[in-house]
Length: 100
Image (cartoon, rainbow, N blue to C red):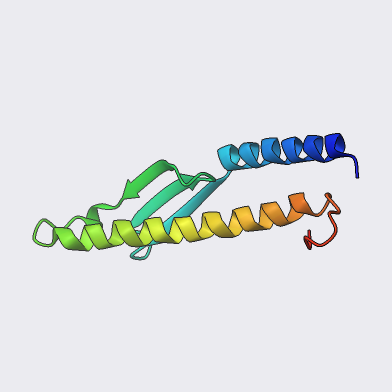
């Protein structure tokens, strides 16, 4: 196997992964969409929406719980989307023994 070819393929795969992470947008929700969180593929916060009904001055912990749940929902969706993307990228490598 030609190592230069493998290195070139690895660099191309790394560039595609970085592009996918930058372009991916995933929305997580909680409380029947009272709170929405948008993350990119690197799990960086890109957007946040909080409905007025989610803001109870008597119970701030409710909003905290909704924010955490929406963020967890979004991170799970990012993981799933990136796993799906990575499966497609590795398929073209044909590296024996790696199952790609």
